Length: 458
Picture 1 (cartoon, rainbow, N blue to C red):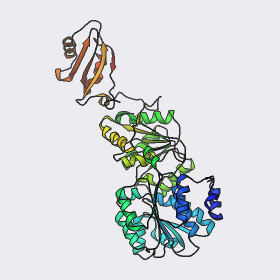
Picture 2 (picture 1 turned 30 degrees about the horizontal axis):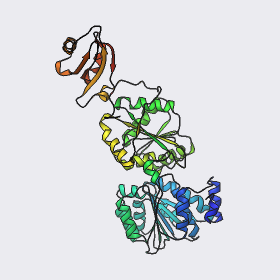
Picture 3 (picture 1 turned 180 degrees about the vertical axis):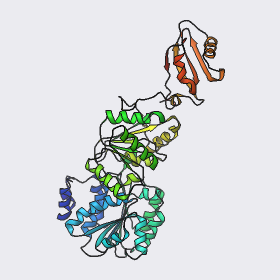
């Protein structure tokens, strides 16, 4: 299929797509739009950034009419995503003379009620949708379309009871479309309960393998995370989305990067909605090239030209990893995902690799940044907290000679681990708290740190 004309889309929608520069439908659009226009219920497994928003909006505007009643409801997990979807819906709706509205918490309810009076397409978060329904300001009894966007994230955030409540207050005869990057059990059960012989389209095999995204991990501890990030920013210029696990961490990293001279912007739940919207618009428009976010706040970021995703904090859940790296490598473009992993976080990397069924490649960040790297002996210690060094001596020495000399240089017996020596060359290990003193010992020559692999076999 070469272009949207072959999908029998009406001229008003086609005009909007052409104005936005959309020439050819993506895979999910090619498969979902014809089925949806035939009135079929759909369960679509499609990765973030695959063009799924227009896959459900185009059929909606193909069928709804210009009248003052809500004919379509789109549920999203976050307000950022609600605004994103409504913006796209509004662009198409404007050509059709059909009003759209985004409803979400943290904004004026009175203003949203006013806009609802003329809206035919509503995009909202479950909590605010339920609030307005209970108040009598939102009536879904006449809807023709019920769309659930990012269904797996809805499940993760505990919205399943809310979704079921909203569904029970809609007509039995309606078209239901469910879009999700992964297919947890709750999604499958929801489809069986509320959908009529749905067509299932699994179009995101590359969601797990992240086709188009080169995946890497960097072995680095707390001391050198920031210096490695700085080196990455300076030596691999691009558009960066950086993830941390906490709001406090996001704010801290943004402040530190700005002190180093970078223009970095935070995105987290403690910011006002106006600030969050302004930040997202700046990131989309190209005014912002370094955005730092939590997982939840990033759900509204739909930007096609992100070159790097950096997991400054490794995600604790495998699905979060998939969602994070799916922000780059979109629409056949190449992207790079880099995860910082400390010695104590190997189990999380193991789980991620098992989930995506591939090995994440180790890499070292090349070049210098604006912050000097420090030797982090804790990252090179074994499970007993011992750090290994190779060395040479001026004369042949036995293991006991080495231990005796170490005692003379302030090391207790329990602070010296395994010692191996053959002639004038050997290795020894010492407790990490005293590892910085080894290179200062005079009888040891050409002392080098023996770098530990992140895990066996790496």
